[in-house]
Length: 268
Ligand SMILES: [Zn+2]
Ligand SMILES: [Zn+2]
Image (cartoon, rainbow, N blue to C red; front, side, top):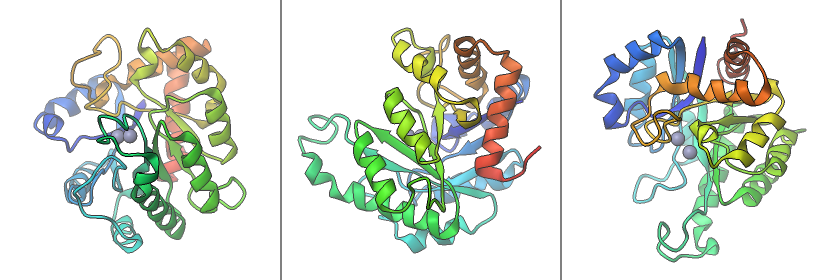
């Protein structure tokens, strides 16, 4: 059985297709998925998915790219994290990608609000001892530094978590592993141009590796460019298997076990 550790099934293009997606998941032996929250406004919709289906769980958090939305307090996050089937805080982190266009020409110094928002999430995660789903893009040094400053340094961890949709170097992976965190790979590892990232796939210990779709984005080859959904996560697993010379079934099992160790606490 495969487990998709990160998807956005509440996004309209997927929510409208949910019965068909659930059928495709069953056919592809994708038994479980974690539905990730990116604004407080969407939390109820994400949470409803986890409540309605016993193979879905959800997170609560506000994505670092989102602006013009409710800014979460530690208490906002804790109130929602205490609800049934909420197993993680995030996605949260830092995103400095595209300062010229995506960020409207602002500087990294101007993004102090992102760093504050990230600290809020870390404090909530530590307070409720739930893992962080960390999004980091063009911001690895600050992401690692803030985790350490807030106490998630690998020796004083109360949250732990995962660096999701990992696209950084082996050096950054080493630092995240040293903090006690997991590394999750998406369909990007199937892209022809991603050889450097496949080398990181070979580097991460198998007991710290997760797989995800990050759907509706980033569909793996052979669906690249199409709308992604959790039933495609075996293509990510297949790439991990081929890079590491493992059987597909063993990758499915190991990554599902890691998912349980990190999120559900139910160990088979
Ligand atoms: Zn993300
Ligand atoms: Zn995401």
